[in-house]
Length: 192
Image (tube, rainbow, N blue to C red; front, side, top):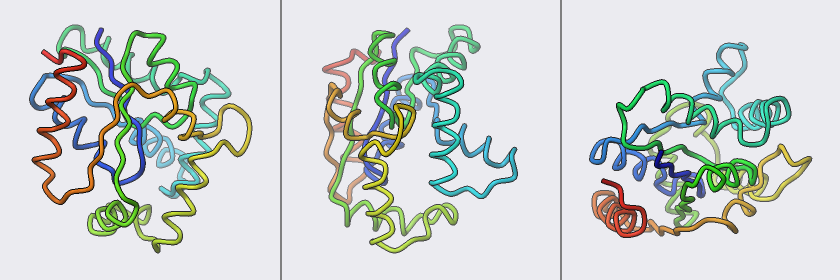
């Protein structure tokens, strides 16, 4: 099984990389954030970053630090050969990142300037989750970058420290970024 775990800052372009792998290379694209959103809806909770962080930490405590990666791999295995690999986003806990490596996968970090990322997120306004000031956006990111509790809480800085590939996406041309990401991943990961 080929596996890529995507991580990085909010609005950097992780979904764009996942879409390239899915649409052009036949990979299964799993947003673990979507799994958490589904769980929040099931519980009747608001779709807010703090709620998603709480559910993800709860799942890691109950099922192991790599639970979100395991859920993505389970969906890949259930598809029984339909896909060439699985790409899971976002990896926000060191245990998830380590699980990707344990399974022989590659970790990719995607980043961009904070103001560029904020503008991207503000323009898409997917939900109340994206409706915040720049200061609130940066405060949430700071809370997710450094572990603030036990090992089940988010620690994106720890994930970044063990990533294998780094992509920068500061431009306005998303298609150019997708091509550059695809070229790098082809060279480093043999996507075919």
